Length: 278
Image: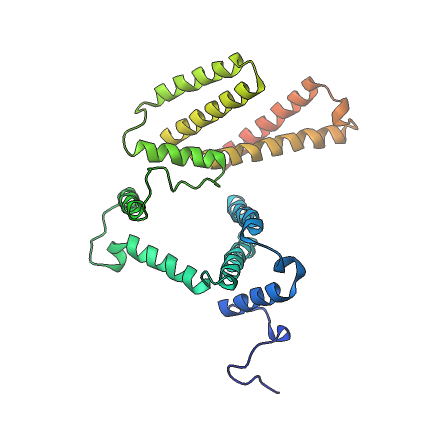
């Protein structure tokens, strides 16, 4: 069988599925050289796909789909490779620079693992250490505000929690969840008192912001909590659809009372199933 000489340039037909990252980098190069869609993409056009793939990873983890997870992680890795390839073409940096940046950061932020410092007990201590280290990194980077590096592209609820946590680190925070609860009630009243669409949007935003603050005080991730509620709503609404369909009733012909009764039925079934699991 003929073999390719060492160091000979690979052709597209040479590329096969592989565990070697170099093959993925070559696949990306070929796509940028030969696929009309890939060739015209930019950092800006690819960024939404990067975010979407990160959520696909989170979704597979949430439903414990370990068979799908390698593929989803691969899709996310491909996004990193895509950005690195575009950067290399522009003479900015390459994939190696991405790897070097993250390994440098991890080694720097874990002196108790890679240096002489002794590890402090518990994840909480390590989190405190990270926050202090990141603060020094922000100063070195020339940030003028404590909030400068809270990414603006984060989902709004997640960003709200991060902004509040950052402000809390310097004491700008309530120390009693009951006060936050009172603020939620206040903001809810202001929603009802709003008179224009702009005011209502503003007040709804304030209400969501304070709810995110309550979640932080209770050590609940608001994004995870809302995803759970979305999944719960989906399950129960599908029960309504399925049951009505089995009865030969269209959704648009069902009364609100009928749908509410089926919603409560689904709710009771979920509670019973949870008790059985416990």
